[in-house]
Length: 209
Figure (cartoon, rainbow, N blue to C red):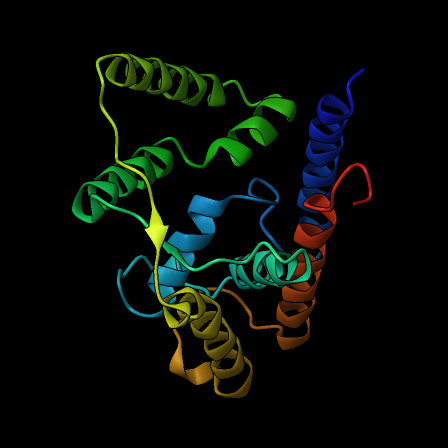
């Protein structure tokens, strides 16, 4: 087996274990790991929607962003980049999120639900497959979002800085945010550290370089 294929399999195993650990740390049993759901919860926590049951500053997202940022710095691959066709990227991203949440989760949660025997996730799988197939047709016809380009260093530090600020505010003044679950500051901090560590481990080179 090629090292690249083995690395993909090991990454999947790590994500599966992460879902179990996050569930043990307090995440809902049917949503151990779901990027779309986590972002929806953060949007609710800052008042962008009023669905009371899904309002929570998800430390997992903070951990993923900071973990990837640290990994890029450590491997000397960090570069501030910006993409073209900003409006189109925003609209496409919005539709991806709407579609994911309509089927109760992102591709990660979909696979986890399938692994748990939830056949409702098959509908989501069909939707993702159809969308990917449609996307390949557009690409064959010459559709492109154009290449990204180098931008100011400050631009690349905005999101990590926002995540650090969000974590500090959430830990120091949790009353600023709407929370739909019993708040456990220790658990929140643990999740952030765990997700940062997870991302650093999952993105380490399989060759050790």
